[in-house]
Length: 214
Image (cartoon, helix red, strand yellow):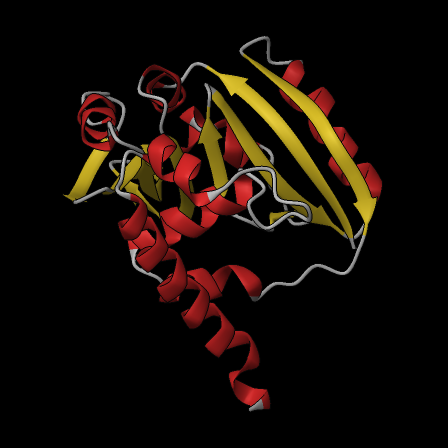
């Protein structure tokens, strides 16, 4: 299996909100439906950051979106398929391997295919529209783990935010690139709160990964 990571820009209220409010947005395509002859794709997003509420409020103002519900830092909506560049990247030979991550005004997509050429064709397809720019970050042959993302669903939103932020800031690197004091300041939470969320998240993930071996 070939796996490619792409960096994508296109005109989108979600991309603009991620940059304006310095939030991270994880996006999942769920299902699709037809209404009045038009096809819509349903999308769930989770917004993380101090200004998540403001970002969600701005996203819901986009008249192209059919807002289904908003709860906390989660938003579920439908968007016309023709207005989604992500869906134009997919086909019977290409599929998403991970949720789309939106940050700093860009989409970061991880796609997989049985053949490398199908992934490379996406670059020409998207850039030829003149309405979007896509850049290949990496492309390699590997055996993907289709079940790893589901482990994160066992965490609360705050626990997931804590552990993903720790990972992205290389807290789990050796040697570590940050410490929890600096990470807590960056997230705008007390040190003790971050430690509690992180430990609970780690415990849940360890139970999922190692529970069967105990």
